[in-house]
Length: 520
Image (cartoon, rainbow, N blue to C red):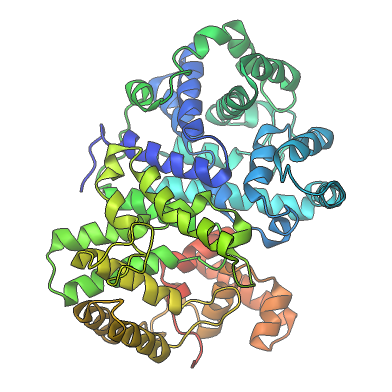
């Protein structure tokens, strides 16, 4: 489905809502920030193209925050959403303010001693430039690349490089300051913080924080405009849903030639899958297999495209789950399993929030249904063929992926599991036949790796994408850390990037995460 200039803002709003839920901020926070940014930009008398840059940069500000950083995740007491929300609320140039918000928002029911120890460790991590420079760079890089993938103009993508920069030059990753900051970025800094603070603490608190951070985190000219008429600036933002107001005030976009709904759905998939190193590339792999299986089943092009989009969107609800459950190595308790199963309901709810994705909500949220009624959340018996096909592709891809507590199954093992479940009545035999035919006919090959990567370099980039350090990669591949450093350098040179987030995105984009890198 090709998107018109009028349709693009709505699907971008859907992407922003997915990002909101993933960060743990209220739904439509990004939409509200975009409205504020547009009004600020117009108040400054900027040209409409510059208004658009501020508007869409603010809308997409949270899209890069989905990257899982294992070293930090382990310190959040299982509440990554609270950690992310605290950092979005805080003045990141003030460690005491960061600690205040972490204490308030992260794991509020944790035992006091454990909470205090976690905060002490986070103090050290968050004040260490060796940790935070690459982390902030990775977030900005992912946000920028997702913006590029959905056709955003360069003014938006450049602003997203400066999410964590500050007026006083004490920001990350480059310490850019003052007038060297892009105007869209300076507006984004104030609009996104003001909107979140307004939603969490009220308008007066948000106003007080703009005053307190003026000249530090925020640019004085932007603060002065906000403080000159805050009541006028937030007119209409107290409505239960802001989508109509957002669409009314969204600036036109000129760079939509050739952009398809599937491009935005794919951007959603990349955002969601980055929440855990264990799911990196999962939605892309499911979509690719679903289309191949659909063609084996002789479905038409429209049905194939519907399956592809639904596959990209099927795990959207996982952005609302605690990261501790997604990465738990031990067996889930019954209560935890119920919580995980809630993600299909969340997928349905999130996709129905916008008309652009509403048509795919039912199919996308049915990937855990089974033919015998043993699945969730609807417990359908004998679901439609396309529902079973997508669910079977998701199940097969999951079997082929390494997950906490178990190794990935080989092609033969995963195929045998699907056949056995078919005999048990969980799958229609025609569905199993279509999936396994697609698997056997389209096995990935290492003979033509992208960008001239060698097999060893491909192995390294996949392990980088899965969050392993150079030392861990060396142990995994039985080579020295120094050799790994050389391989990483060669990988960066060949794929044209210098951050692990970009390397991970490259691995997913080129299907490397689903390749058989070993003989297993």
